[in-house]
Length: 195
Image 1 (cartoon, rainbow, N blue to C red):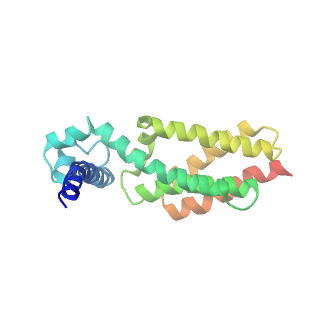
Image 2 (cartoon, one colour):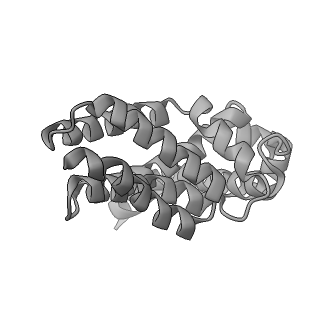
Image 3 (cartoon, helix red, strand yellow):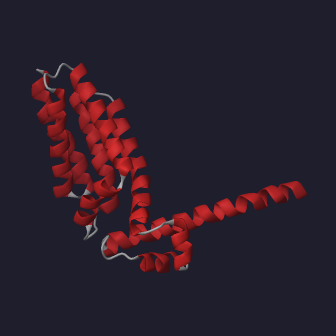
């Protein structure tokens, strides 16, 4: 019995750290959607999370580190949406369309309804190296799929798909519209290249 109690106590500090991190990220996400990235301060995050500023700074060095933490969590949803689309059924155009809709739909899901969606959207790629690495992987997968399908210029077509999908996501913002429009867009770009 005593050993069990000791094991439980050794887990408690890790659980508390994880719980504090979760509170910080949840508070920061709420504030950034409501106040924007520029309008969110470390002091406001600490207040919203119900903790002292030193506790916040023990977890994150600055506001950009907090934002990067939020983006790192979002990247898991992006990867899941993209991978599900690429592995799904259908033609190469349908799979790429579903993958891009999964990627941008995940972002739209998070920022939809925020008056600061444009600011948050524009900032995400600047701060997260993980996003850049994911974009590189996703681009390579799409180019490989296009090449395998016999597309003459897969790299250039991918660049067009990426730019157009990004534009649709930035202009439409709401998740349902993004998820509906991007597959149509990709089908119209890729379809003629397959014939």
